[in-house]
Length: 190
Length: 190
Image (cartoon, rainbow over all chains, first blue to last red; front, side, top):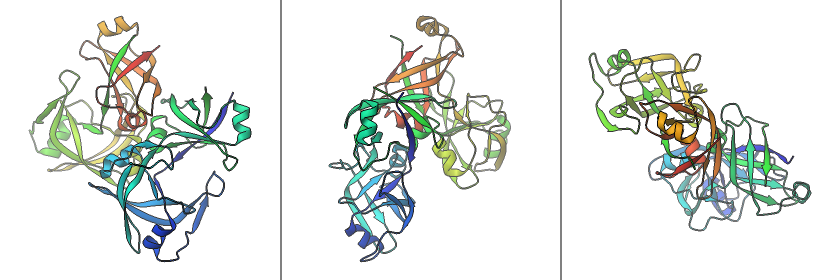
């Protein structure tokens, strides 16, 4: 049986070097707070405020290292709350997605696109993928057994890279809908 | 195929007559704003603030008519945000559930239990239940087909009464996890 660790991604931001300079000061380097499950990825000490048309969210995490495009990943609950558009997209696929303002201690940035609700996905190494009999970009389902909110997520994208560690990522709405607890394993259904 | 309308329940409060008196003044009658799908149930013009240990939510809807016990139905996103316990429970099953403070324009009430995250459920008439071949308290699954977030909800409770209209109720976390749009129909799977 193909089982994978299910991790909940709270709202977060990826920033370009240019935007880090504006928000935190020229030449600022992000401070590693905690390593994440994906090799080389880390949560930062720095925080920003995300501003939509109706409201804002303070204290939003930044995930490092710097990227080629700034991307804001929020839940649909967040999107409705602050008044921004957040289409369901894979990370990096931000063309025509939502815009928002990002405020840091040294300045602010307005992005016209980059706000998304992450499409649920599974990170696998080529070895995991081979073992499970799945391939990059394949759409699978994942069965979650929980206390009172068991469900089967459809539309889960497989992503394969030798830079990955095996983990399924869902957002906080999805985690709450399935009552996911830390350490929970999901069963991949092809 | 057994299909049922899927409705999203936003956070709301049911109040006792005694609590309505405290929050809105002695003898106050709730003002009907909009009839709901379940016969006799209505959303009110009146609003309250829900206060947890960490934060509060203003402008929370009240659903009438008055009930025998005050009950606060919030999402797990809300529960975490304001710092209250909200176990997954069927409506009315509030023993040992979460507590909170409720503030109205004329006073406030602190409840030691009554805060829940509603267990997903389907209201059916005896005729619907017979047609679908399901019975009161039966646990079923419901398949949702949506753009990018299709899923199958497990742990869905069937509730049968001749006072009901056929509808599945899920909370905002669940609705967002499935990208539910208004008018969406779910397929009951036994």
